[in-house]
Image (tube, rainbow, N blue to C red; front, side, top):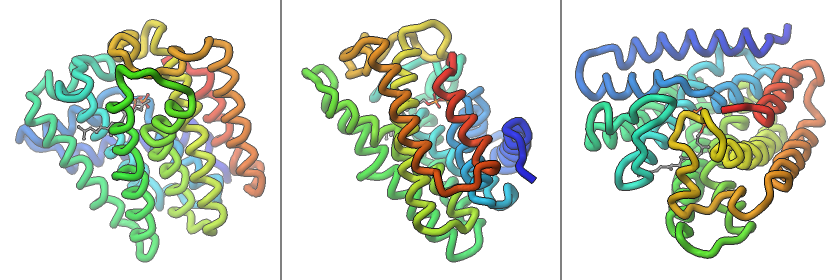
Length: 286
Ligand code: GRG
């Protein structure tokens, strides 16, 4: 039977909170910081994409829950580090003080490091050889050829004249790679074929770019939970900075349609909650 989005979200939340309690439930400052960072009210887009992609391939949710948690830990690490005074210097994240404000910058740095490493420990809970393939999938997506490279490209571009191809390249790495790997990891956990995993990765990368465009559109509106319009104020390249609202919305819609086409070979009923979720990402208000 195909589980609904609400069922999957409930199962993830339950698993996630019991993991946090078990792993970071002690009173030491590092565990407290990790627990605080993970418990912030995020949208959980990436872990839900793991679980929905896994279901779209006919996988069992019980075999993908730890994988989904690992992906949210990596995402959280990136936010904790990105908020630090040496990077974006943000004091608000997910509607409350950032980790370095609540604790201190050194603790925030170590909290990000711990979340990143612990995420890989969790991936190795999967049976071999999937565990190895998953470690490779995630590390390639977030390292020096993936998300971190995207962050570096963003830093180098800040304050300079910018164009669309450069912006696409930055966000394809900074946002798209992790989201692409989240979808691919759902396929790995379901023991899908290499061909299906490749299509899921490309699907997620396109969705990731569409997600970033939507994020930029929301950045000049109220209620995203981060400092309002901060990217634009810092001289950062944004889609809204170089194209009209209408064009940006059109681009996000085109990318999503292209992504959906990549999943043509998957069972219509099983992929329905995934496609519905992707549509809600385009319509989201935060
Ligand atoms: C090593 C110092 C150092 C920094 C690395 C790689 C990196 C930090 C940062 C890149 C991550 C980043 C901030 C990407 C932007 C992508 C994005 C749209 C983030 C917000 O994601 P949401 O909206 O957030 O899913 P929630 O809070 O809902 O999970």
